[in-house]
Image (cartoon, rainbow, N blue to C red; front, side):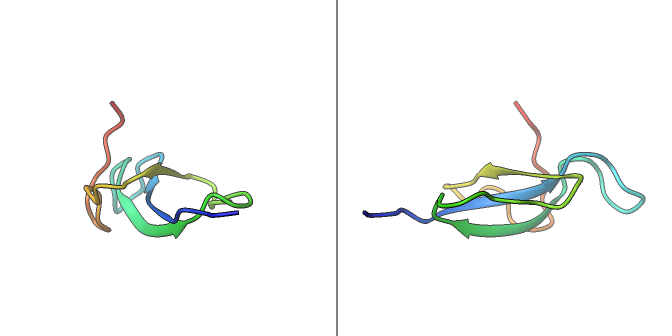
Length: 61
């Protein structure tokens, strides 16, 4: 079985005192196996084009 690793941007789902909602706090490489578990208040988006480095802001379309 072959797996493909892909980059995901991890962002805040709500604003904090220091950062707006959508602020990218991490980039991870994940092969899709298992369950990706993130802390409360964070979500991920596939970022194959690397548009969202840490410190950028993701805006849902």
